[in-house]
Amino acid sequence: MVPASVLADVIGQTQHRVRQLSREGVLPKAARGQWPFVASLKAYIQWLRQRAESTAPESDVAALQRAQARRMTALAQIAERKAALQAGEQLPREDFEDALNAVIGLLRSRLIALPGQAAPLVCPEDPRPAEAVLRRFIVELLEEISATRVEEAAPPPAADAPGGARGGGRR
Image (cartoon, rainbow, N blue to C red):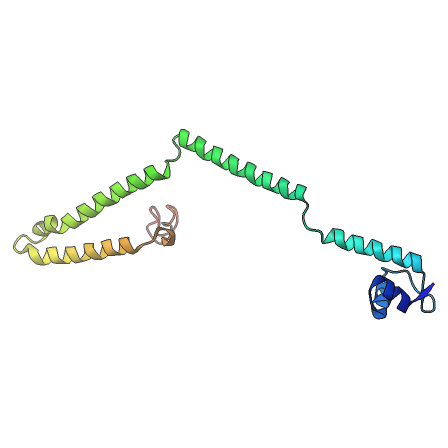
C-alpha cells in the first residue's frame, strides 16, 4: 500500500487526479488514504490501453477496404454509363453539346430574321414600327438567354404540376 503522493509520482499524475481516477473506478479504492500499488499500476495501464484503442486512428486495413469499396463503386458507375451509351439511352456529352449548339444557332438566326419577315404581314401599310417593336423584344429575349447560366437555371415545371405543360394553371 502506498499513499496518493507516491502513486501520483509513479504514474505521472497529481494526487488530486489519483483520487479522481479512484472515484471514477479506474483505480482500486483506497483504504485510509493508501492505494494497493501493483493493482493500481495494472488498472492504470489497462485504462490507458483502452483509451488508446478507442481513440486509435483508423487501421491501414480498414482504410484500404474503404478505398477498394470506393473504387468498385466508381467502376460500377463507369460500366453503367458505358452500357447506357451502347444501348442508345444516353449521348456522349460532346455529341449533346454539338447538337444543342446547332439548335441554338438555328433558333437565334431565325429569331433575328423574324422582325423583317413578320412586320409586313402585321402592318402592311408601314411595317417599320412593327419591325422595331419585334426587334426590341427579340433582342431582349436573346440577351436574357445569353445571360442565363445553365447551373443556375431552374428546372421546368413538371408536366402534371399546376402551370406545367399539361397543367395550364389553376383548375
